[in-house]
Length: 172
Image 1 (cartoon, helix red, strand yellow):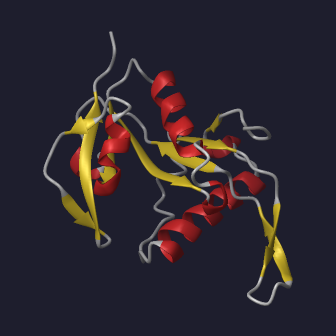
Image 2: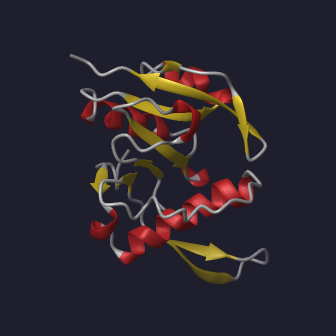
Image 3: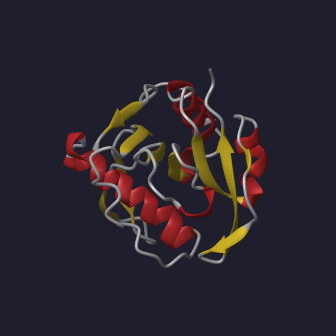
């Protein structure tokens, strides 16, 4: 892993325009287009003062249309997630005193290279003293279990995808 190998963690106000644009580009590409989930991704939570945006930057890439013609640039990061403010009620995974991890996403062009695993590992290490929760897509339950998360409630469907609420206790 080379360029962009340092985890960047910023609040909304600290993000550059290109970083914010790239994050929104990636989330739309994966959640809305690839996973066919029609939902309001820009939910206002990104801009809350204590929401943290964690990502591995990538070099700007050329975007082409279906005929190969250049149509623009992508500033999407390799992997991204947001860490919600403490005690923010993030659905079924919510536990008092927790910070929730949400919108975990890896860019399709780097999948299989370990960026998502590295992102969660570093985020958990940085916040190991806090109770962490997330609503995992159920097929990724084992992935998150590898970082100490365990189910903390019944499975549920969100946007047509089965999810498992999970939590990871704070380390002493």
